[in-house]
Length: 301
Image (tube, rainbow, N blue to C red; front, side, top):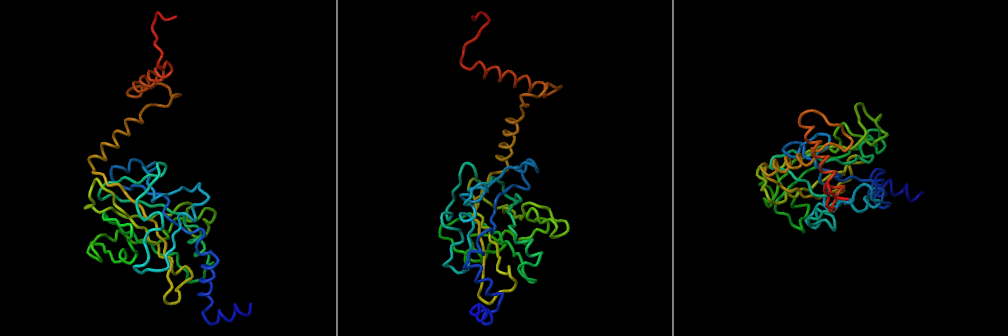
């Protein structure tokens, strides 16, 4: 205890808390990442209640007990020695369960993530009166590299002319969207709704169709205890790919999907107009499926 007090006097108590969080793993467990992506405009924004979804590279889902360690990627160095994407996710990769998002040039993209206490604890003063949940920066490129470093990404600008000119700053938004809160802590602030937070960015109108657009979600969480000592940083990243589709092809795709989902449920009752014909077709298909490959006719025994 005496040693703790001596070190705290030398470094400052707040800075010592940061060091202890890092050494004990408290700065890693329960951190945040992008859980889900949807189109908030454009042809693929077919329904506000049930839009098509996309995910970050090699996403494992919230049902996985290892999602924290597999998805959290902490960055303590903003130099060219630091990869912007975590190990195993430096190149594109998805499972069938968690595919890439599909979008068209100019679409507004919505990203969802859980605050995992970083907002309500800040509002409650748990991390100190000057604590901040941080900022989110969205960067994008259509010239992805497996060895892309964070220093080169942070030089990109809105006009695409910054740094090596291979990417854009797409948006910068607060981590706290002023609405979301961890479920069970809705009373931390007026107007708070339990559930995921939201952050938005827009795909460039110049995005080339027929190829992926790679996006980097960078969260600056450096001031989670307040202004730190000089030289200390703490960022997190998620890397994802979006398949860019032409608006014409997207409209055809959405129309085809709509046609394939128009049949009524099996227990629905026939109604007038179009639904009556859809129900008749459905019953016909059901009878065909029941018969299967068996040949049947009026004279069969």
